[in-house]
Length: 140
Image (cartoon, rainbow, N blue to C red; front, top):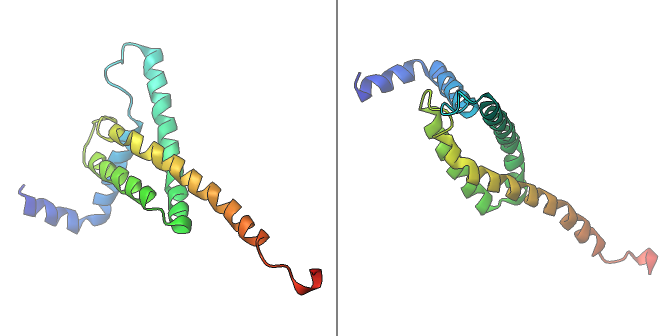
């Protein structure tokens, strides 16, 4: 198939193509390591680590969205765009494990911390702003 034929096929079955993309991405993110299959404990540890990473990445989606909505931090936006770029590439590969998506690890870990920092720093600022209001005439 040529590129035009592939594009036509994807567009005519867009829902299926999107589903296959996300299934491939999920399988790649949750895949174990093929290099340590003979070492069960190490393989289990890698599988558990992949599951923790997957859960944290799922938690990052609403966390980053809320932090971006509230604070509009350009650094967080750039980190998320860079990580998404890696995940898009990871969704187009099949049976690659995490070797494509693992390079996003430093990006999404930093994005996770920045998002938490932005959300935590939002609450005290609102309280500080309320404490600096001028006193009402009744209290003077």
